[in-house]
Amino acid sequence: MSLIENKRVGFDYEILETLEAGLELLGFEVKSLRAGQGSLKGAHVVARGGEAYLVGATIPAWQPANAPKSYDPERTRRLLLSKKEIMRVASAESEKGLTIVPLSVYNKKHKLKLGIAIARGKKTADKRHSIRAREEERRMDRTLKKYL
Image (tube, rainbow, N blue to C red; front, side, top):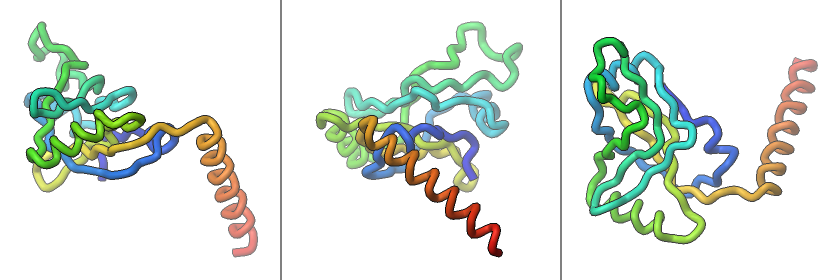
């Protein structure tokens, strides 16, 4: 069960490979995510200096009155990945046309994990094809529902 999702990823990108990363968070950020607050819209992952970071994700403080005055909800957060995975992310980032996008934040036992994907951006024609396929699927479901 995911706590927050990036719903546009499947529409805007063709997902090539998925990875699982830990997140380095503050305590009130963890509480906020477990309450379902936060957004991955417009976020992406970058690899710099042998580490991977989540950039552009918004995680508000759980109780804004108790958060430090200097808290930035859109701060860059470090991802916890193995060296091998960081090298994979860095090589994909340097490859033309590929980007690393977050899919969702979810619980795994007592830890919060971030699902990330190495993806290629879709062209407008590909997006139209996705819309057409989704509409066709809906139409088939409606007709089947009539006869069942």
